[in-house]
Length: 431
Image 1: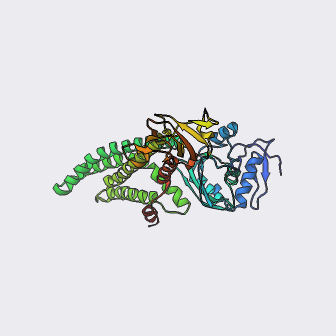
Image 2: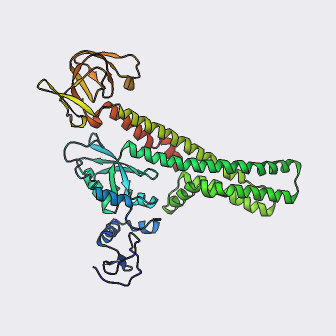
Image 3: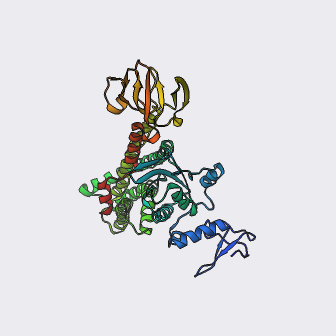
């Protein structure tokens, strides 16, 4: 397969210049394709064998070569191959036969990357569902544990040149902060130019009822058009870009609807300027401004929810006092296993869920129940991770650890609600 060619060629997969000495020529039915290394050629063959070669026509890469995020993961030897090989890791949740995991996908450059990953993973035997958020690169994957495991799914993702790492609330909060900052700048720009647009628009409205000379009207229309342009091109760029990728992938989305509405009003107004009819620049700008305002409020709510989850998880102690042969040892909470005994002293929080085996106390469980008054607990009573112990020293038998605790389940439900689409939203997208 390897052969020599003249320089100046570009790798068909990663788009890097091909070194004459290291180049690899792939055999294709239509034309010979050149690759910079065997890894790129292997990825190309994998994509082609799956019948997804359209990816190379749909993609819109601004950067060439291997993404820095994947290089960093490879250098840090970030690996998920031990998942499902024994006790479940914190980022794997079990729901009967179906297992679910939240992963961060590294190396995504455009919407076509998400299309490719979803298609490849969906064709993996045992995978039930996969949903990737383009803004945060967060993937929610469900699979049947008896048919496949997360290690195989991750291998499939890596086989096409992407990398996966466990999702963390901190990573999601960082992504939301960046997205919110970008939305705030675009919204501020839209509001500023929309306010400037209202001045000539009010003049045009007044002229409609009271009369206006052609020269003044033309100047006001031109000023309105100039003020509307940055709103559409800069503030509305995310919608325009989303609509482009949706149409190129032969799908319709809300971005298509927003883009059609705003640009139809803008282009129609330009045409009406030449024919002397009414213009609608204010309508085009306000569509973008109001939708951006809605997205900003939505993202702000998500950001607050993400911070709430982080603060909630911080309530769970990272250390625990384990009881063995009447001796007490302070150990990492992650090392505690189901069935072991731990001691919780006055003023300490419960490291994990369990049942009191010795002692009597009062426990503040307001984070779960919302009840402000502490509840009395005796031998045989259940306690919840993160709740505050009162004045008594108790010995607790651990019943749930890690992602099994009620505190972790609450956090997981909040995170799932942030990424899941409401049924009415899916219906609206289809309409």
